[in-house]
Amino acid sequence: MMKEIRLTGKTIVITGASSGAGRAAAVEFSQYQPNLVLASRNAEVLEEVAAECRGFGAQVLVVPTDVTDAKAVIQLANTANDWHNRLDIWINNAGVLAAGDFDATPIEVHEQIIKTNLLGYMNGAHAVLPFFKSQNHGVLINNISVGGFTPLPYGAGYSASKFGLTGFTESLRGELTSWPEIYVCDLFPAFLDTPGIQHAGNYTGKQLKPAPPVYDPKRLAEAMVNVANNPQSVTYVGSTSLVLKLSHALFPRLTASITDMIMRKYFKVAAPISSTSGNLFNTVNYAMSPYGGFGRPGKPRAHRKYIAAGLAAGVLAGFCLTLFKK
Image (cartoon, rainbow, N blue to C red):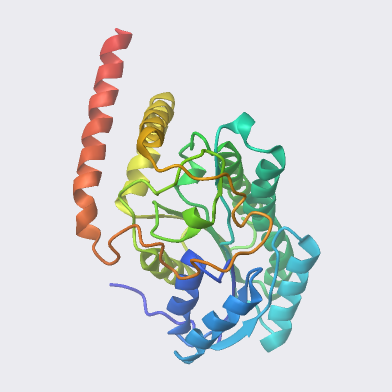
């Protein structure tokens, strides 16, 4: 039986709330009438999201914030706490992506990805933990993605940031053992139908699309709500997430090689496109909805054929690998 959701009146901070999973989460949480603090670099779009959330009865505060700026994130935490003299839940969600050969992608691009995806989450945790400790409770939710355990060829900076996040949160969780009411919760969603890939830096020369199956970001938003209400250390969102976790755990090199092969095959037929830094260094004003238009939102059954094929391929690959080693 699902635990009753009690979030009314709680102060919840969501970073990266202007589009994609963050925007979906803001709308999902708003239906429980919390005090929502929405943060991202795009103040104009945040106001649009805030108006939508207020329509569901939530109180909403917009705080434009660049998570790569540690001082700005501290100010975000202070502002959130001062609003209703409480800070209950912090959701690290802001993230960026760039694709391309590692050595053909500018090093400042790799640096910016790590500043946003890894240091941005560390900035969030560093800013909010003093409040959690002073009140002896709090929930820190980290949207990590399958990139936290599955390497992404042609996305080395992204993989470095996400693998780093996994180590960081596991370390932090151990450090907080003596604080039983402070929770560090990691979410590992599979590929989502968000605009993230449209906002990505792209140095491949080819148009990017997420690999199927592509999941509805509402599923991740619902998982965030459930974890905020009933904290769990690790949550896999979408069956594909768990399949990829097991695949990499059992056959790490083979998993990376197959991923590389699939991507190289895709690049041969993908439409050409000019190089772009996307939203890495500046916010953008296009494709700001929760959805990217790549999947079939609300139809998880459509993914089963992909999941079954993936399982079969993984089993066959493992079996063949075992034979070749004999």
